[in-house]
Image 1 (cartoon, rainbow, N blue to C red):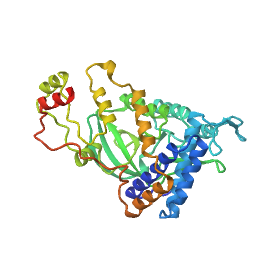
Image 2: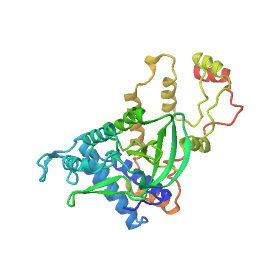
Image 3: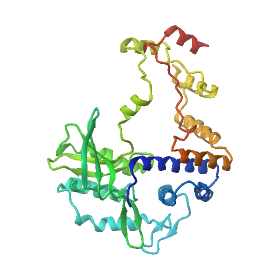
Image 4: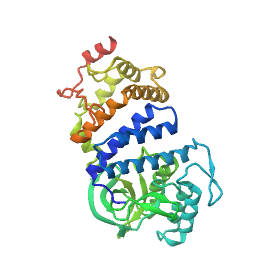
Length: 360
């Protein structure tokens, strides 16, 4: 499956997730959620046929993966292997047996690494969450991209691409083809220090989340350097994105005094457009007494409630708004609108004003 150009691919991602959110927050069960997504997609007339198919295929893959991982639907018996399965499209046990049949067909030339990858595939045998040994010859257009605190990052095109789906009838994988990826190597890493890569790769296999950047495999260049093969979702680093789109959160140049000020109750200014319930929650997050701060469950519940309220538009209004944005190619305003909440100053917190505002 040919990978879309990055900008178009990112745009269709936004369409896909807008449809998913509206469908999820306006239905009460999995079947209704799926039907709502397909109905909305059919009504976005401005999308091309292949774009609609792209969204539909992606939804089905994600929907099935979630059903399998969470086991939220009634199990059925696989006609091929006899095991329980939770998807009409995928049987994780059939895929696992196929992966095992390939164990002798590849090697990293490192027995420990081979065993680790095989263990990961045994833990996670679903498309997108399958870790592979990837031959370095499969990458082209390799370019240095950035240096982080602990790693070096390169961008590349993976000619074969990651495992995107499973063709049950033909018993073979479907690959992304010409997929933009990131190659990440840790500083000071050598063959004896692969445990750092093992830990990160294993976490991806265990968590199995579409909300994480994809971890597709491990490779080694011609100089013997090991790399993780990761999904690439932007043409710039997170640091550059924040620098370009957000003002600097530098509230003071004297770090020691800043720590003391924070301990004494100094907090950044709150922009006036913030809704009262958000401000109340933020004040609690900043409270010096940990028992008053909200826990992760409360924050999650608050966020879900706000999202549900946000997507309560009637269907026709939602479709009209999304269609208009697809036509103009604009960001999904107001869904992704940025609020300029910080005013450029001399980067110092005005302590008396902030404390006064918090106390009031």
